[in-house]
Every structure is written in C-alpha cells, then in structure tokens.
Image 1 (cartoon, helix red, strand yellow):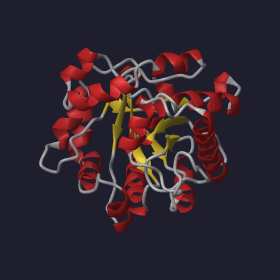
Image 2 (cartoon, helix red, strand yellow):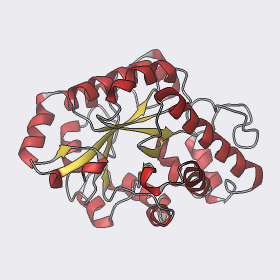
Image 3 (spheres, rainbow, N blue to C red):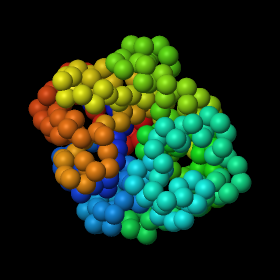
Amino acid sequence: MSDQAGFVLCADDYALTPAVSAGILRLLEAGRISATGAMTGRPSWRQAAADLKPYIGRADLGLHFNLTAGEALGAMPGFAPSGRFPALGQVLRASLLRRLGRGDIAREITQEIIRQLAAFEDALGMAPDFVDGHQHVHVLNGIRQPLLAALAARYPDPAARPYLRDPADSPTAIAARRHAGKALIVAGFASGFAVAARRAGFAVNRGFAGFSAFDTRTDYAAEFRACLIRPGARHLVMCHPGLVDEALRDIDQVIETRPRELAFLAGPDFAELCAETGHHPVRFGAL
C-alpha cells in the first residue's frame, strides 16, 4: 500500500491518567496508531514515560502542551495563581482580549513550555517528535508566539525540530465532514498559525480532522470514516481513546467515549475501513 494514502493517527492525552495511557499503549502495541501526545505535567507521567520508551522510533511521540487541565509544573502567579490551570473558556477570553502575550504572563507561559519540554526530554531521553496542545491552546494568540520562540531557541537546528500540529483545514474539507461547527471555530482560533510556524522553520501537517461529539449515542465508526474525506497532503487525524479510572472522572469531561474509540481502533472494523479506503496510519516523516 502506498504511503501516499497514509495519514498520521494521533492519540491525544497520553499520561492524562493511568487508564488513558493504558488504552493508548494497547493501540501502539497493535500498530493501530502512529503517534501519541504526552501531558508531561500530569502526576502519572513518570511511569507512563517508562511504558512509552519501547515505542521510540516506532511511532511519533510528542508533547501535548497543557495549560487547561490540572496543575502547572512551576509557579505561574499571573496565569494560574492557585497553581491550578484555568478552564479553557478563561484562556480563550484572555487570548481574545490580548492579555496572554503581555509582560509577566507571557514569561510564565514561556517558562511552563520549557518545563513541560524538559520533563519530556528528561523522561524519554529525546526531544519530542512533535508538539501540539491540549484543547488546541498552542495556536492561541499570546501562546503561539512564546511557543514558537521557545521551540526555536531550544532546537536551533531546523532539521532536528519537532513538527507542529495545525488544527485547521480548508472550509471545503471541513464542510464535507462531521462536526463542521466545532472544526470551523478551532480553525478560526488557529488562523495564521501554520504560516507563522513555517516561517519560523517548523513543519506542519496539511489537513486535519478528528473532531467528535464525544457522545456515546453517535456512531464512532461513521465519525472516523468522515475524518478521511478530502484528506490533506500531510493529513493528521486526532483521536481520544483510553480506559476510564477515577482520576479521569476528576479531571476531564471526555470520559465514556474513550473506551468506545479504543474498541473501534483496536477492532476489525478499523482494519476493514483502512483496507477499503486505502488509508492507513503512518508516521509524519513518511508523508
């Protein structure tokens, strides 16, 4: 099968909780996904990192940069005065009001980026293959600028830099798939990110899908099939598989649909869909 039909299939939220990690590891071992993004500030990261090491070089392992779930790795008195990250809605408002790129808050965001990168490198002994953001925060104005600057300074060799996720796509591609409203909103927040990333010397995907209703009443197989409509030249599909534990119930709203995604991706229907459509998961470098 030609790599021209390949796409990156990335499981988000590795290390969010032990049960989420366990589900993702099952898919990595089966070769059903080609990437996963790790939340290196979460309490389970150290053990999760040890479990992830066997997949170095076998899948893209990246930093799922987090500013909205749980606690910061260091002091952020302006951004997270209690030590706990604000909710996504607060971060979106601060971005729209241009409060994130100023003074102390901009410095705090830069420092947290560096801390999460260092936690990844220290645990895995390598730089991340890619960087994206939990709830797409990495593309927000006031966050994208310090992120690009911090990554360029930390990885000065353009040939050794991580690739970055652009969570936008063309309006025609979005309209042809499911959950166009959510995808268009995210694309709006991501406007200009891909251009800025390329100008700064970072590769980005071209084509993005994976938006879900996170509703157990919907047909996830049909949702996933729609992700492969009008794929881009370097298409990336996000997914959120995993098992459920009490830690997940305490930290996240996406709960019961994770085992459903896991079951589909691990099962025969996903393999049959790949065979039928000619699309299959590959690492970014193969695109």
